[in-house]
Image (cartoon, rainbow, N blue to C red; front, side, top):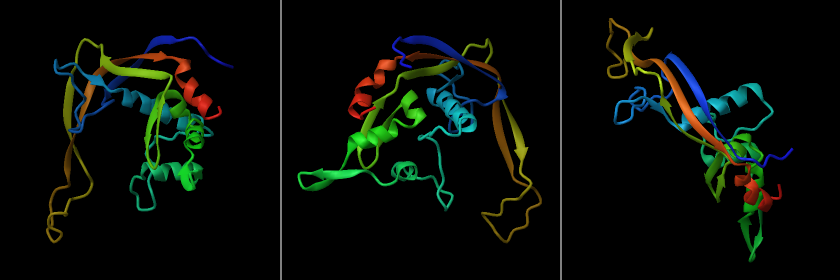
Length: 201
């Protein structure tokens, strides 16, 4: 089945006593005017995470994976994990990566078919996905953020391994009391037509 018509709409994410999209300080993100918002990446993560949990046969490429040392893998390592070595062919007597074959592999991943990708590994490919999502603005009439202290069951002796500490580690977490994030989106099925045609899809 082919879809040809454009679609425009909104997706609303309701978050109660939670931190839907924190900044690097652990606080809910705020615009310069103080309004709480969330990036498009946060919404895309929720979609990809849902797909991984519910549709386990679908391949999701842009999702954090760890190696044997529990460290995040690189983009090239992720490609080889899903598809093996890069396909190569002779170009002017030199082995070159066949970009159309790489593009076809990438388009087999549902997250790239939806949201597109900027693939900058051993070869560079840009895919403009049909689903485009804006930042989500909290439309709830209040932006009440609260911070609470939390404790770990363990002490932290990293600074002085010989020291005995009478208290466990204390941390903080921040949450938004209530948020209703509105993400505007558009779907243009024709965005993939050119690269899909070149890749033989």
